[in-house]
Image 1 (cartoon, rainbow, N blue to C red):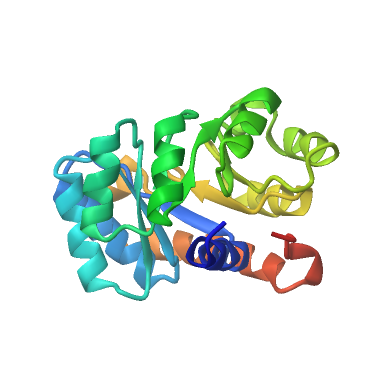
Image 2: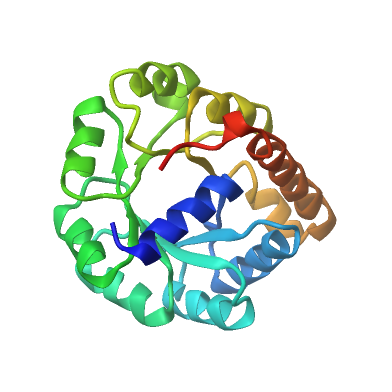
Length: 224
């Protein structure tokens, strides 16, 4: 693992939270991302399903240099290169994509491939992934899966993503997850349509508080 990737992993180990902004328009993605960042979420994932996703990434990188902006739903090498050109610091894939992991190793880029089973997770790790996205978390074992998996595989950092409500956050972190990724529960279609900044900001701050309260304890720091 390169020093730059190691540094990002350590930052994620401290922040414990990735905000996933999946919206129907680029304008909505920019608006929601701004609200989350200003509420204290330092990691923002923009999926390639967002229209003009690359432009959104570029604008966020320029506007919020203190934040870690990443690309999500990365399925092809050309998307990874577009994200890299936009200044993204990390890539997230829904599956174990060997060429993408290799690209991350070559470019000193943090790549989080998505996996669901122990076999898939171990494969991603053995291919060189610095951490693995456990997805969809709530639908496939949740906290119990993390607890059981950490027994035989204590050195593989997992980022739990998928269906994670606010009340689930402490449980995932206590079970040993490196971090959690939160999308629809944090950036709901209703809040985006209403442009309800106050509600989204309050919810974002609650997620940040839940993550930070845990990370302040020595038990909340995963050895990576």
